[in-house]
Length: 171
Image 1 (cartoon, rainbow, N blue to C red):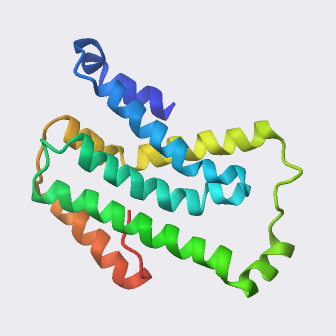
Image 2 (cartoon, rainbow, N blue to C red):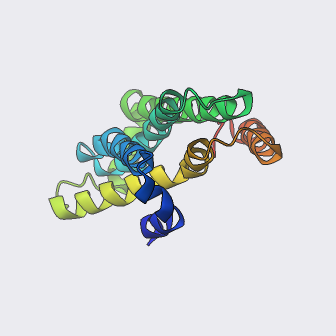
């Protein structure tokens, strides 16, 4: 339903051949690729995969729309990259280097070895669509050629202010 509403909102763009759908497909494919780490351990779809998907999507937006960027939209994309790297890096470190976390989680979270491939694919697809949709406001702004305005500045301030409270910069 979310993807269909996105498509419906941009129906005219789909017909005029400006590459809108191809670009959004690239965003979705990058989200799928980044979160595919969850096939190793299914909780990674929504933890490590999430962090690195957001970081990569920030990079993709910076590259894909390099001609349309201004200071505000560049800042928002950079904040996505910083947030994703910090979160993904922290979660990776915690998972791989902190033995107490691993011992505690063995009893709390199943390893997914009994989970079917279909269930894993469902989590992977759902999470990847969510990640693509999370960056879609920035994607739509850049696709429409809109630069920064008050809402972009307020959004950047919220992302930075939230980092003081949580230790992470992010959406």
